[in-house]
Length: 111
Image (cartoon, rainbow, N blue to C red; front, side, top):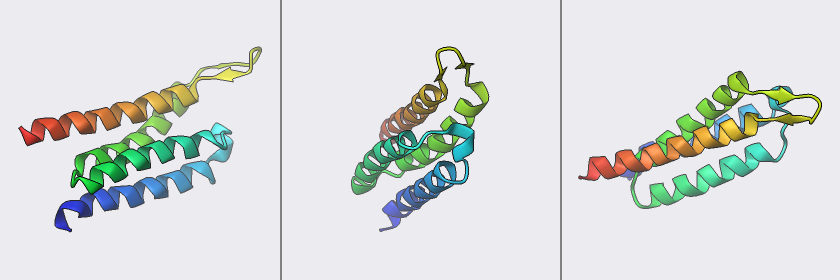
């Protein structure tokens, strides 16, 4: 159980981040479904990592979800004519990048 404590804590933190970003910050991003899709993917990947006793991936996923939102919010560009915004792309790429970083760190740590 000790090996999984950090991973389970990161899963709880990831859920808390989702609840804060999705509901109170809705006016900042105006997305209803994408935050849920992104956190679901991160939770599945993190859940598998916790199951195999890897705590690095869930921690990186939790950090990446919040960091991805912040990066997406600050670096977004909008086109009012086409009604497009790239916040969701930046958020997704950053979150997935942190998850990949967690996998790489786990592999390096294992060797």
